[in-house]
Length: 319
Ligand SMILES: Cc1cc2nc3c(=O)[nH]c(=O)nc-3n(C[C@H](O)[C@H](O)[C@H](O)COP(=O)(O)O)c2cc1C
Image (cartoon, rainbow, N blue to C red; front, top):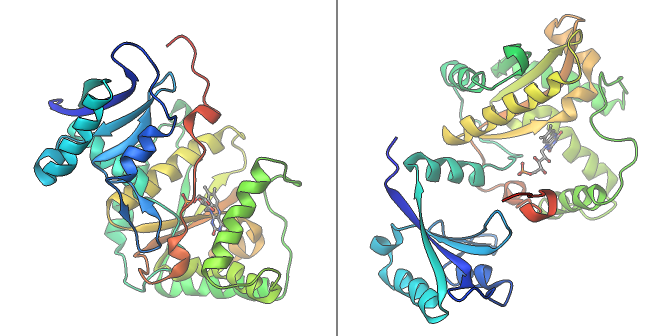
């Protein structure tokens, strides 16, 4: 692998060892080279991004291609480092890393799709890639039912009928906790409110909230729907393998120019899915996945889900 592309890293520490202040200097510097997206949110340039070292020090990572595409921005950022006597480092980047990182950052859940079809070959290719996922003892516990066209529509119709009848089926495994505690409750609510606000559903409008929720069962109009199952004779730990498999599938789809939404909503209707698809009683319905081309005009596709900073969930020792 060719390792000769170097990223320039401006470290939030002066050459004489002082921590550089203010603490949000990296975000401020990056916002000066950022762009406003359609939804009025600031999007950092892929060439000047904030980051942090493993010890939590803020850094700004500058892609050397900036030198070619925007000399003024390049000079501005380097002058900033020079003026404030900040430490600079060059780090080698495997060429593929930038594209992989960009794919991770670009992936987000899509909740309205165009009818543009996706071929069986493409789906098979993505599943083959996802099956390169590691699994304990290489057990490969995943099993996938890929549906398109009439097969997808027929399953959606059967599920929607149950949903509209308020028919309750017994989930085959608990995904969400019975009661939500903090900090997860706030994160969950934020996501829900953001979705309802974007699609114009006022707070407390139960019929429209229900309608939106029912769109899950249509795979959000995606041309391809996947149903995942797991043999119930396997152990709970195999859900770890499953999560990695699905994660890889989402990234592979994104890299292939497709959008996706993982959906636990399907696991609410195991009886209908078992019956409709003729799935063996040995198999647990893990969930579903909508796959296809995103509708660029759909407001619900504009949700930007935030993430907690690394320091809030990772503990580093011995670095
Ligand atoms: C296992 C799993 C189940 C999910 N189930 C649903 C679902 O039923 N309906 C839905 O709209 N989104 C569902 N999501 C999507 C999450 O809401 C979404 O991943 C999260 O809010 C973060 O947003 P992002 O995917 O856009 O980064 C699910 C995600 C995962 C990983």
